[in-house]
Image (tube, rainbow, N blue to C red; front, side, top):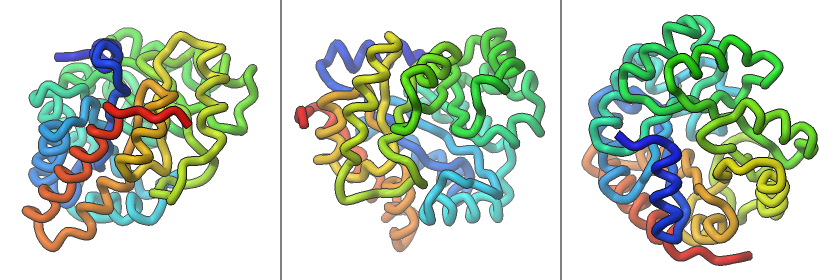
Amino acid sequence: MSTLAEAFARARDENRAALIGYLPAGFPTKEQGIELMAAMVAAGVDIVEVGLPYSDPLMDGPDIQAAVTTALAAGTTTDVVLDTVAAVADTGAVALVMSYWNPIEQYGVDRFAERMAAAGGRGVITPDLTPEEAGDWVAATTANGLDRVFLAAPSSTDARIGVIASVTSGFLYAASKMGVTGGRTAISSAAPDLVKRCRSLTDLPIAVGIGISTGEQAAEVAGYADGVIVGAAFVRRVLNAPDHAGALAGVTELATELAAGVRNPRIP
């Protein structure tokens, strides 16, 4: 199974950005969610963020909130998330978990890291965990060979980015703008500058997320970043589909479009 470093290196060797796609586990059901993620991988997604559904997703917009509500109503637990990670890893793609800190803390920091590694997961994105509060998490992920992905925002000072990068491994997540997730008509003009500042402070790959929903936007971001992260747009394809077959077709179509975009970068 590929690691994050290998996924980014492979994309770099192919002169493109890595494509990272997100869906919550258990959405619409456990089995259907796994099939949707496998379809995304087959259509060109390199790295899958498996969302851990949480009842208070402060950073997420209405589409992801709706999906998370559906997953929780279907009985999705942390163990279901880890089963989904194992299924994604079996496709050959790199499997990550995207989770707010509270569910991991409630599950048990060491227990979660151990079971994540056993499932074949490669890393965890924790959008609301600060470096100052990450001591136990750093120890647990290091002990289990997991990457830790932290977020930098346009409002982050260079000093703050340096602190964030010091506890990050795998890649640094550059949020393209402040605010909740969801597609936008244009990528924030702050994103290229944020990536430039991050590059001056770390050798980690930089992936940009929040607001990317089309192949054209993916191509724009691929012109200056190492990775392109898309979440709400995939969720929206599933929410708008008439049935599971339509959802599979929708995520396949979007992944194909985005995969073409990251292979044709446009420097803004």
